[in-house]
Structure formats: structure tokens, C-alpha cells
Length: 208
Image (cartoon, rainbow, N blue to C red; front, side, top):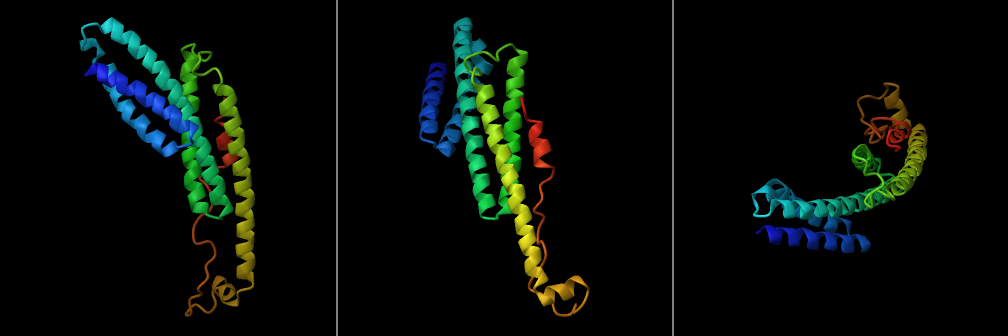
């Protein structure tokens, strides 16, 4: 059973590498979830095997491979989310953009924390993380540019909305408390387009 699980993890890691090359992020995510469950079972029960020392060496090798593949996956996933964020901004879908922003911040923070752990353990120069700083910094810069575009687009949308309402007599009456019986079909800001915190200051906390 344990050998089968080891083979499952190894095959899964190879499949993820192929999927990431093809930019199939969702499929790679599902495979990573599956092999992570198998890997966790192995790590918790390897001491029950006939040759625990040998299995431990195998698990150490698998840990390095899984960490490298996971790092590559999260970089690719975050890059995809940033692209989705940009599309949402271009379509003036600020609700979707706000949700994506929070998700991107979460993944960037997660990767930074993992790198901090590697640095603490003296593994920042290992093959897994040797190019991480460059890749992460590039990704963060890409995101900061996207956030700047978001802010500019949001301000433009608000200005256009205000201009539209300024030329709507019924809305002007409603804003000044007039003509309250007849409800205007227009409203000013039906939902909050703002994000919870300033993107620039939040993103700056993610710099390595």
C-alpha cells in the first residue's frame, strides 16, 4: 500500500508539471490536492514500515519535490488570478475584482511565509527556492501595476457615474430630499467599490 502511495505521489508531481506547462491551473490544483492527501498519510505512518529509515529518506526526497512543485503551482496560480483581476477591472466588475484582490493577497502572503520558513531553516539557496526571490518579486511588481490600474479605473467609473447622475433630474431631486414619493430608477453607488485597505500599503507588506 505504501509503495503504491509513493508511486501515486511521484506520478502526480510529474502530471502537475505537465499541466502547469500547458497552463491548466484548475486541473493541476485538483491533482495537487489528491497527492497531498496521500503524502500526508505517508508522513504520519512511515514509522510503521519494516524499513522506516529507508522510507524516511524517500519521504525527504518527496518533500523536496512536492515543495518545488507546490511553489511553482502557487506562482502560476497567482499569475492567473492577477490576469483574471485585470479582466474584471477592464469590464468594470469591481465586485469580482475585489474578491480576486483578496485571494491574490492571501496567496502572496502564503508564499512569503513559506519562504521565510525556508530562510529560517537555511534552505533559501536550495534548488527549490534558488529562483523564488526573482519570480516572486516579478509577480509582486506585476500585481502592483494591476492595482494601480484598478484604482485609476475605479476613480474613472465613479466620476462617470457621478456625471451621469448630475444630468438625471430625478436623481438630483432624490439626493436633495425632493420628490420622495416617486422612486428614481437610478442610485448612486449601489455597492462599495473600495477594498478593505489601501492596495499599495498592503502589497508593500508582501515584499521579501
